[in-house]
Length: 73
View 1 (cartoon, rainbow, N blue to C red):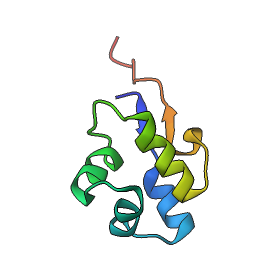
View 2 (view 1 turned 180 degrees about the horizontal axis):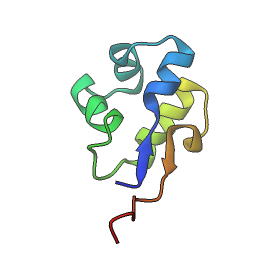
View 3 (view 1 turned 135 degrees about the vertical axis):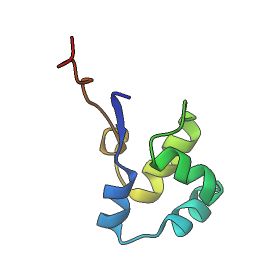
View 4 (view 1 turned 180 degrees about the vertical axis):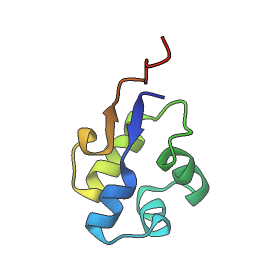
């Protein structure tokens, strides 16, 4: 998928655990793991806003686009 989730990077910069972040934004650690590992199909703006508030960052610090590998074409 061309959208890459960099929550791990921000967690490391903030020295915060997944469990602490999940508690602070009000979602389960399992649902945060789905988002963090890039398996989510969508993210609510309220969740994205809570992530940015707690991690003190911008949405672009958490999500980025990468072109898919087209070497086989």
